[in-house]
Amino acid sequence: MKNISQGSGFMKTDEFREWGHTMVDWMADYLDDVGRYPVKSNNEPGATTAVLEKSPPRAPEPMEHIWRDFQDVILPGITHWQHPRFFAYFPANSSRPSVLAEMLTATLAAQCMSWETSPAATELETKMVEWLREMIGLPDRFVGSIQDTASTATLSAVLAARERATDGAANTEGLGGPNRRTVYCSAEAHSSVDKAVRIAGIGSDNLRKIPVTEDLAMDADLLRLEIERDIENGSVPICVVGTLGTTGASGFDSLKEVGAVCRDFGVWFHVDAAWAGSALVLEEYRWMIEGIDAVDSFVFNPHKWLFTNFDCSVLYVKNEMEYLRTFALTPEYLKTRRDDAVINYRDYGIQLGRRFRALKLWFVLRRFGVDEIKRKIGDHIEWSHRVAAEISFHKDFEVLRAPVLSLFCFRFKPEGSSEAQLDGLNERLLHAVNDSGDLYVTHTRYNGHYAIRFVVGQTETTEADVVRGWDRIREIASNLA
Ligand code: PLP
Image 1: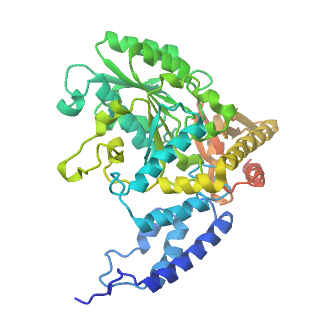
Image 2: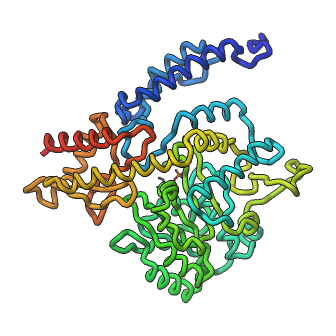
Image 3: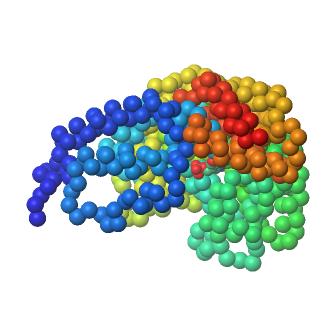
């Protein structure tokens, strides 16, 4: 067989260099110009599939063709998450230093499961989770590791809680026995908790969704009652998942109140701060972690609001040894000479193989510096408050949930409209706004009402983008009415 690689891989060095330059130029232009793309892809389902070849090519294809198809086939089906008027979901923001580091990570393609498989990756990860811990004000005794997503981190916490509750028996004997194990979260918690209890063998029937107060916080009194009732009925409560910054409308569970209940019953307390955790860099938001002493594990996503591209989630645990008992496993072929003296991050979660994610954090935190990160997140919060205030003054709009950080919810409520019309009207408004390509927002239900969510958090968003987003919503709404 002809050796097409000629000793330098499927692509020769010169071609790699040339296309690398072409693509970095494209990337630089893209990040400059991303605001000119329609934010959300308007592809119909199947549009990309229809133009993809049915089978892989037998022969090598020239890069020119692949590159052309990237632009013609892939880009139209991309929603531009880095667009400055992406106000949907929660942000998954990135930044130029983060992208550069990811290029290096991809080039090194190191598999960082053990210290020995890349000592610098392990030691940098340790330092980065320490830096982040200091930045967000978590106590020193929390030990961190980088995970892919908050969903994985929450599953890991539930698994560790399961081991605590069964004194390690779930790992060895399986989750048998006559007693149900129960997990608790608020009715506003993220669906990753539902997924975690399914996968962990707890069962979704044993997940208790505790009602929230008017302010969207888990009602700690009802949590206590529910736990007492479960114990009376022979169940074993194993874990409570609290949330800082719920996804729908940004509620905050009180770590103090929920933590007190967890302490009384010896239940693992996991905190999901996937989005809101980044705001802890600002000292004025540290009220969120009042009561952190009662917390066993805490996750937040630098890939949401800390300018570090997806994926990068950090899980902190208070009792490292207890946590490791769930995951640590060393088959013969993974043993190394240094196992006694080093950290092997494969023992800190579900996956064995690990990407070198610490590098992008290192680039981002050094290139931005903590002060700039604080300034940017502070701006997002301030602009969100300002635009929400403007919306609240408008006679045809109603702010349903005011921002605590940078998420708020509102609806269009033109004079003379009846309550029965409003859900449909707002749904039409949302689609019309998103179809315009000028901005992207998503929705939730708030007190039973269809509500439009607006989240400020993109790296290149300016106050003018926020104002322009609101201007477009107003214009489009007035045409609809
Ligand atoms: N928790 C909360 C509060 C979220 O809002 C989200 C996603 O938006 C998640 C968890 C899941 O995050 P990930 O995509 O990192 O699993």
